[in-house]
Length: 102
Image 1 (cartoon, helix red, strand yellow):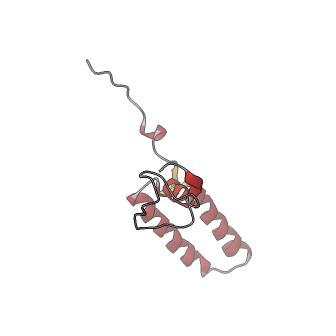
Image 2 (cartoon, one colour):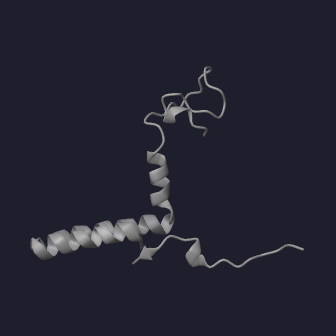
Image 3 (cartoon, helix red, strand yellow):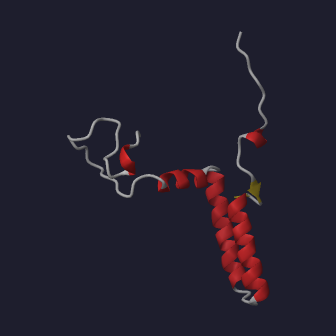
């Protein structure tokens, strides 16, 4: 008999504000308030809206895009697309991520 446990969706998905991940939404809203409200550059609100809609589209396609991008940035600075005979299979070059397993 297979055992199953119900897990709420809220525990497995990222927190969204208006369809955008929470850190992006907070930064976007803060920039809108500072530049639009304090500096009275109202044209920036259109740019801010476009940025929000773009982030919403990215989040709709992949809710974990931010975590994927962070993990990608932590990898090595160079990528060698060709197989080299000096490398063992499943390992990165020594200077790319310091020999961490793939």
